[in-house]
Image (tube, rainbow over all chains, first blue to last red; front, side, top):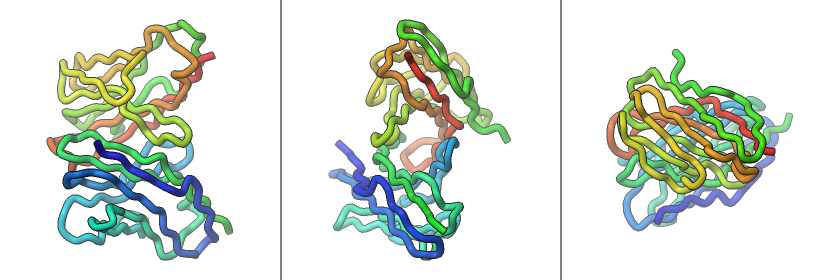
Length: 112
Length: 114
């Protein structure tokens, strides 16, 4: 069975500082990996996805993630965050089916 | 660009009451999903549909029923609401086949069962 672990429930960071949100997954087969963002009182929006090829994936709003197969990780990074990045971020995995398995989410709190 | 639209956005139910949540998508997507979101648990799949007239159970289907009579609509029903069903419900849809396709989400329905 697949599972997704987001170890940090909340990450506080100052504006213009770098940030890394951690995601680890477990699966015995190849998977597709996703990061979604949820702004307050809104639905989820796709940030980026890894399907195959280059392990460094660039997404919207300056975010990027690196797929590490040996460590089964897919950490999300941004070199300089803005107040507007305050949101909840979800890592998700999907295998051969189209169903997404989500992590528990990490709340990014950007302070001025 | 409507995308995925959920109605209602908020609802308060008494224990034992029934209700239906409606999801409509205008992107001609084959696949539709219902998730529930609870604090610290991420999103969990309730039911899903791979096309008009089809439905299947997800991770947490108990207490819910669904129907997909038209391709663009996916209904989630609660026959006898319980406090444990207090949650935020999200509908999503996706196109094509395979795990690589992007899911598009609605704005959510906040349901409180008292």
